[in-house]
Image 1 (cartoon, helix red, strand yellow):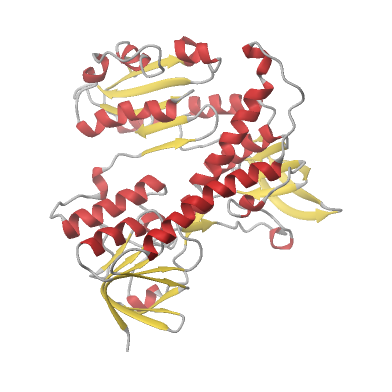
Image 2 (cartoon, helix red, strand yellow):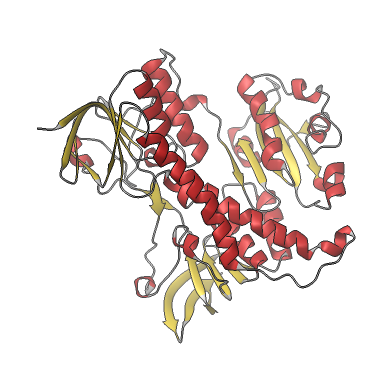
Length: 458
């Protein structure tokens, strides 16, 4: 006979554990299933470890700039084993925290193993069969492996296996031009590797505006990173311990050698081995679970949260998925996925803070709009810190006076973006921020100034 629960949660990413907390606090008996590492991608191979590495790389980079700030140091020696050890300690604290919280949670039973549906109400984990009226799928995603001749015959890296590196790759070749590729590229260049980034498209992070992509390219090339755009990898082999790549760069055949290859070309959901067909849960052509505005799947009583539903690919959207589900189930509060505003950061240095529409999006919409820009060279705080790369840009609807988008590339812009994001959620006019008296000297103090210099978008 199946073991009965009120709710089953598959996966312990960012929405799973807090949902377990809310359900059990409401008196439900919950089973939580984790097949590998507690905490999901963010804790183990995503946000927490990569930002720990970014922090180490930043300090190393600033140490090399010592003379810019009026002091001298000796040779900068990078100990990659120590860098990895620092990262591992930070990850272990979060990982163990998630696991211990779930195991100590009243009315919560933790199962370790691979979950597979047997029917819409029953899940098997090894020899255990669980049954519940409510099931929540929170299985996340993994790095995609592109179909490139020879790739199966070499030992390549992805965002997960990069976490195991405790040495400095002499020449790291990165396939991809998105966020994972750029963050790893800059950090390993700062650690001391030669780095080459191969991007299939014409420019980096193609979802952003061309001026943002161009500025990021300038930043990375300024640190000595080699960038190949409009480049397609046609074959990869291993020769004498080196990775040899055959490329087509803007139609011309080229060959490139490196010591290691990092493949960062996107992610796919972990939904192909859950037995979703036996539950009747519908997925799209890419494997993402189809959900409605309240994250309900095609089967009543089954929800999908986090990366596996294709409605967001960030830790903060996964946590918001938990909030939406909990609000609807427990609080009589009809929150929806479409209530949230697209927002994210790119954690290169300086970081890019993004919210809402791009300039390209606004132009395509045909709406009348205003635009304001400000180079970081005209931000006092950036000048004082000696970090003046990048610029800020904001878009405003000309009729409603509401902010519809912002792209902030510069020092501390990963935090500054929230001053605009909050006013966007409030649906208040941009003049609320423009007339606010921000503290000097900060980067944020120039946001009202920028908003006071809006011009028609032509």
